[in-house]
Length: 366
Image (cartoon, rainbow, N blue to C red; front, side, top):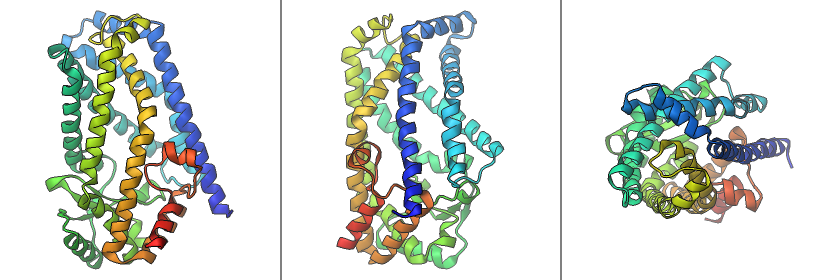
């Protein structure tokens, strides 16, 4: 086993352990917060502040978010800053990292608050039908978020610049035309200011759909390698993988909400709550989501790996660039410290893409 492979294994193993530890830690915090009556006490204290009725939920959610961020800070700082620097993947200073954290928490708070507000609104006016109405909202919201993310959220963290290399831009647009994919344009993002990792993708929907390339791709990858990487992203659109994943997610959401609908009575009573409409019971709903996510994630990952494999195959067939695909995967694995050949158990639970060695073997078999 090479030194680079050992390094990637160590990096990946730490991340797997942190995933498990953070999930268990969050469950413990939510259980303690609910079982000891701390959530009920906080909700009562927020009401006693004399805020407008419309501000009670935002204030409660803000305190929950802020408290969890503080309690989770050691995990978060180690994982997203110290670990990345330890393995020489990050280029961020503490100041830049902190600013990104602030923006990320603000975006998460706004999105979460909107979703939770809709949950209580539907619960209030449709107490018997909220579980499937909320699922419909989830689909609508997912599509809207996909559409606005490239023009609202991504620019908060990265700077767009149109690809200046006319040869590269023309090649990408020609590839999109061959694969019958409509895109607005081809952009670089300044990923190299933050990390040595690389990425590329097709983001957005409708008029916001665009190709984004990590700015270091043009420096470190050949035109053939970039083309086959983007052909993979275009293949997802060609094969309607986004719609399929939305349908899978919708089915999972409906099932999750229905389980909460039929079982929340006795579960809430265990924690001393009377109804879902009490905002103090919200941490119990989060506990449902975490347990359900642990159960459903391997299934969603299984479908995602199939879609990624099919996108790889179509990309290679559409471009004929098998060797470029293999060399690009090797570079990806090295730069991102990917676990090339994980244990089947790790693959089952954590991988939404086939491992790199598996993707290379698939390419070689074509």
